[in-house]
Length: 134
Image (cartoon, rainbow, N blue to C red; front, side):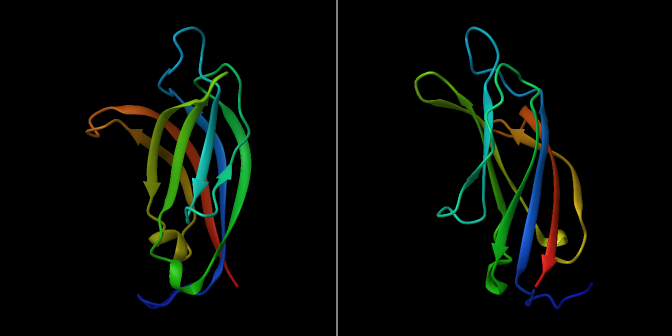
């Protein structure tokens, strides 16, 4: 499937959040209770379930995003949070460039949650991402 540089069709972006590993521990006692927020557009965030007591969670949850023809420059934004009794702590966040996915190449791999300067990592997420044009 080949599209011109500037024109991609509208379609459905499917993201499977498989698992996380070595998530930075934000709790003083015990392990994280992580969940993930995903979005292409700030107005339409989707959220995974909360996995209790682990820094190596397994979700195996799939999310679908409607992609308009003009919004292919948007990146997939991901934020990993630790649910606490009161509030949440941010574990890490990242953005995934989807250019190759929109041209028909499926992504199946690990993405790092870089620390402030990008020299270390706050863990990794295993994602599978593909795009189905309308």
